Structures are given as C-alpha cells and as structure tokens.
Amino acid sequence: MLLKHDMKSKTAVMLPEQPQTVLIADFTGKLKLAKWRLMSDGYKVHYIREMSETETLLGQENIRVVLMGISGEDDCKWVEKIKKIRETLGIVAVPVGKGACGDKNLQNLGVRKTGGIPIDYPRLSAAVAAEMEHTNQLYRQKSALNRIKRSLVLPQVRPVIYQTAFDHIKNGILLLDTSGEILLANRAMCSLLKLDAGKVAGKNFAEVLGNQETPERE
Image 1: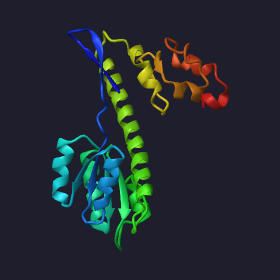
Image 2 (image 1 turned 90 degrees about the vertical axis):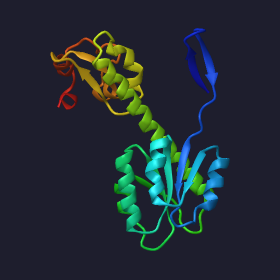
Image 3 (image 1 turned 45 degrees about the horizontal axis):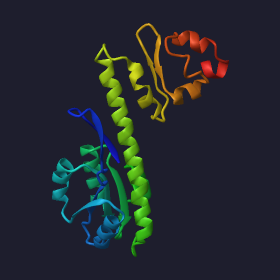
Image 4 (image 1 turned 180 degrees about the vertical axis):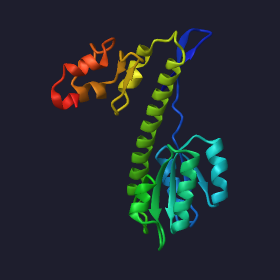
C-alpha cells in the first residue's frame, strides 16, 4: 500500500499500489502464453507484435520490464535502440530461433537471458520478477539522487534531510563543500572508510582520512 498525504484534510490516505508493468515484444509469435502467465502473477501486461509500436508505448506507459523473444542480430539492434530511449529499462530475453544474439552481446546490453524453446514458464516468470526488482532498485536510486540534486540547488534546504535517501544507495557516496567539509556520507561510504556515520558531518575530509590507517588513506 502507498501513503498519500491529503492536503485538505491533513491526513494520510492509504492507496492501493499500482501493478508493475511489463511489455511483451513478441515479434516471432512464440510468447503468446507468456501474457497470461504474467497477468496471473499480478503484472499489468502490454503485448505487441510490431517493433513500430514500441516507442509509442514507452512514451505513454510506465513500463519497467520488456520480455522479448530474440531470433537474430536485428533484435540486438532493437534492444540498443530502446535502451537509448529509456536507460533504466529492464529486459528479459528468450531465445526463440537460430542466429539469436550471443550471450556476450546480451550481457553487454544489460539483458537477462532465460530459457528457450520449449518455454519454461515458471523459469520465465522468475526471470521477469528478478529483473523487475533490479529495475525498481535502479529507479529508487535515481529518485534518491534526483532529490539530493534538488537539495543542492535550494540553499534553504539542508542536505541532511536526504540522509535516508543516501543510505538506500548501495554505492559509496560522499558530499563535500568547496572547503573539503563533509556535508553527507552514506552508510556504504562510512563502511568503506571505516568511519562513524554519526560523527563525520561537519569534519574536514583531509583530517578524517588522516586519522585512518594507511590502506584506507591510500
């Protein structure tokens, strides 16, 4: 459930979560039954047979994951194209014909490969679920970073407000001012540098590193 603040009544209203959206790009016609499997899993599903429909749907719908059947190099080029449209889009590929993209090409494109013909639907469903979780994590990180950026262009908002957002990001992040004073350090960075998360804000970065052992300082 999602919490929505009602500005008129000043109360929090519980709203049902929106279903996660999957696009099935079935250019070979071999993923028809996948639509019903994913719908039974609770996803909102769009099903297309023509490449030309892709850009329109991506522009209109909040699609998180694309499930596609790949059968040749043209499909790899299509993946490259839609990745440029939406970089955070998750893609699950099912090899459905000879001459499909190689594993290395798929990996370089950030594509999760699963099964083949005949289609193992439980395995396919699990792959879509894993890619959806990965994609949602990317969206959460992007949203957190956007909130942090907004705080930096609004001097009246203290960056410390976004400490929670920082801590949800798995990569180590350190925010300094022009003098080297530490404004924010997330948990991952504090763990990496062996710092006390509650005591680094306001200290000079050079002084903090000077108190560390040689490997960490280097």
